[in-house]
Image (cartoon, rainbow, N blue to C red; front, side, top):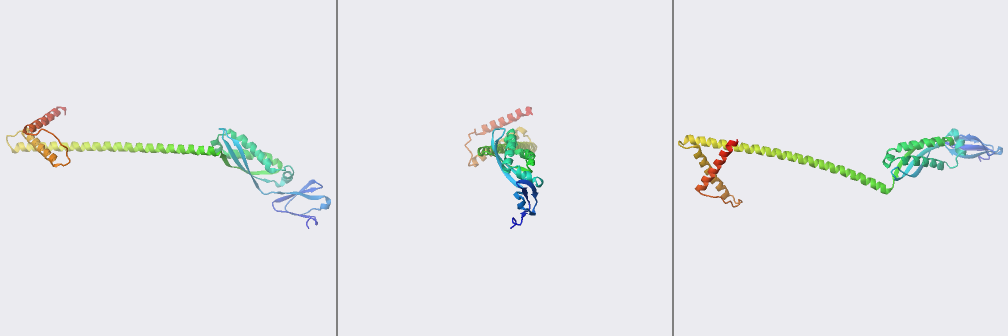
Length: 285
């Protein structure tokens, strides 16, 4: 009915290309328009002004000879004031954009190592966008945004990268564990040294107490029993300790067999040996 009444409707976010006898005449904006077809007027086509997105997957090689698939997402739209250029100058917009994306990516990525390519995704996207903006503006299109959404190396390369990363983390964990064990050993050695020092101090105090007790016993015995000398008192103390030791050996069920000379003469010999040891140690002090 609209065609018979020479009326056409243009939808929102769309423009219509009007021709007169096959020649471009005007760009019709959204709304209702009178188009007398009897005078050679007709609609050559319609052009959407909505933003479109094109995902381009490009295979290329990095500087370190790793093949990767780079996925670029191009967001673009036709310019209303250049709708005639967008309609007439390009027959396949997708192929044109894809060709420029391939050209820029295959010129940029081979200059970068694989790790650098991941780090410089924004720079690659910016280079693609600048090149597309210069090329597509002449055809009536605006490049809204360009994104590098993925850089995917070969599956074997990804597995190798994961193994390298895992090995590095294991090495770091081993170093940390070794450092922790080193600290534990150092602290243990310091603790043992401190314990031995304190044990030595305790033993020294014990021996000093024994010596003080013996000295007091000898002095007290010499005073209370006239005619005795310190040597006599020391011999008696040694004999008493000798018999106490024999008693302890006999009372202990877990003691191993110990063969020592026994008798009054043996006691005298032991006393002589102890006394001689004390006399020899005195000059060294």
